[in-house]
Length: 427
Ligand code: GLU
Image (spheres, helix red, strand yellow):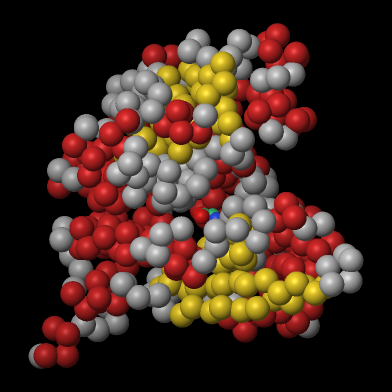
């Protein structure tokens, strides 16, 4: 992980600040995370030995409300990465008008090396270490890469034990039986689908005429694939960390999902007779998928996938960032020069945190919503923000990324300015 992730992220801020009605004071303030916590988490392993893991929680900015953002378990987790992800969350929450600031957390480990019991001890140990830093009105974690509702359930439970009160609203993305919201598990993928479909509608494109390649077939990638498939888009390639499959006539996504669920790895999907009978496909690498000749490319895996090294190989007309930060700031320039229209992470994958907000609202009101209500609210809210970002891009003649940042920054800037700026004090 390059040590410059946060610097890379802040370059988007500087660019947007040129167009947004925001004071220099506010821009300066937003270059620094508000508070960063690094903790050591001792865990008793199943064999009796002790391992100490490093964890982080960063609260980037809370001008618009309590901070919000996921917790990831991944070997690449570092303070720099968590700070940049917290920066992105700040802009994401503002871009879609949630009453939250941005945060992120993580533990450096490969979760696949730990047993379920070890993972539970680790999750609870992490909350023991960060409990004073979080809270329903302070900072509200959620799932991110390699964490899920089970982990969120353990964490909420541990926080409640520490505080001596049931505190459902401290964490979102919980199991439904523990105060989770219906639809939270699919929200990122469905939200991304709503954004893609409404943008294609605005461009006058019909789904049947559009080919799609998706890098990453996890919780977000597989759901967006399913919805695009159902709407008539031709999904011709999908991959996971082990490799991918490709068929120029389109893949049967329901079959791929079913086989991926059964066999876990995409690599195994194309080797099993059953799926081979359903669809014809060739194998493709994760790198190759990025340079496929498709209309729509969806990076839905890790950050830093499209960089100066491979941006010029991209042949897609549209990129929708379902992962956080898959395209670097330098690659943005190359893609723009090539005429690629890129729709940014802080809009495209915001469905997850939007439904997290719905979950928090449900927890605090004690009234729980039907799935249909969750999805309808998600649809209208995310399309409304996408439409405004579209209009900002057209009006100011900037990329959709810059437009999304301008849109978010105007909201954060207003809240910062209302607290008093240099002008305010000079009168
Ligand atoms: N980890 C997700 C994200 O990056 C969700 C965060 C949340 O729900 O708070 O947007």
